[in-house]
Length: 194
Image 1 (tube, one colour):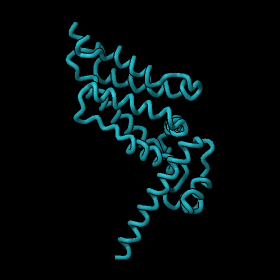
Image 2 (cartoon, helix red, strand yellow):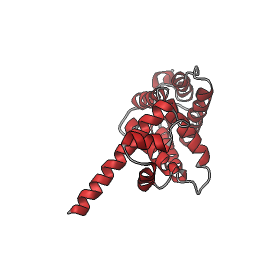
Image 3 (tube, rainbow, N blue to C red):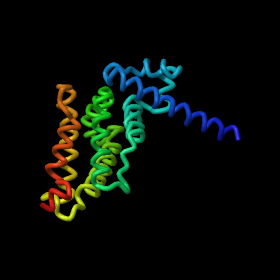
């Protein structure tokens, strides 16, 4: 029975570390979030962080998973307009957490290496995102001139590229540009019928 209790405590501590890391990175930025600072916020040593996650890269990968979980972008059961709104809302929220956007962008480049701890995360996340976009914006009865997979890849590429532009120039209106692009690529039903 003690084993089960210690396991639950370990899971709770891991979640506490992830929440703290999300907060620190969101506030201070990826480059300014050291393992030492994250550990101090949680009240553990940097070595204890590595006990739970193995490496800084694994910790940061799990931070991104936690962010995805908190964003709650699960468009299952949403109509086109609701899915579009949910997608744009996540992009709008990203403008409030520049440190997490920087972490995502930097880790995605590093994860191009198949040996990187975040490689599988980015493959799986990209596939889920494209499936979601294709399901919500691609099955439109011909409203878009692009096939669903191509439409999903274009939207994903534009979203990722806008994040980079926004990190360099925070005046870039990521949500506004993405909304306009989705409207252009996937016209509303009433426009398509005209």
